Image 1 (cartoon, rainbow, N blue to C red):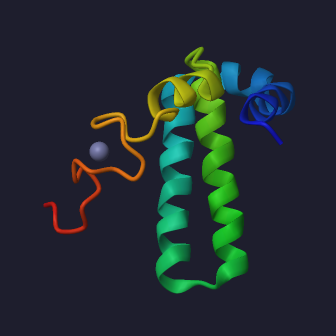
Image 2 (image 1 turned 90 degrees about the vertical axis):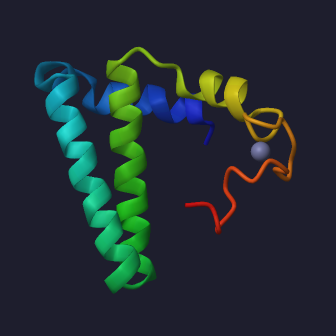
Amino acid sequence: MELSTLQELIRATYGTQDRARGVDATFGWFIEEVGELSRAIRREGHDERVVEFTDVLAWLVSLADLCEVDLAAEVVARYGTGCPKCQAAPCVCGVHDPARP
Ligand SMILES: [Zn+2]
């Protein structure tokens, strides 16, 4: 599934509820899901991690849609040529260097 199709599906599924809840409360739900993903990565198995990754992505897409961000277009614009800082793939600038503080 394309990211743009996912955003359309999430809007069709949750858009009315998301708009009624608003950006701030939706952001709160997104952060709660990130916390659940953190626990799943550290303490749970693959199946639980899959659920939390998909929930985080769904809430992120909801939030982007509420903020009128076209995620597919914007992620391609930012990452479509590689690292947004050095434009290389693989990155050569070290922005994701594990030794970086
Ligand atoms: Zn880079």
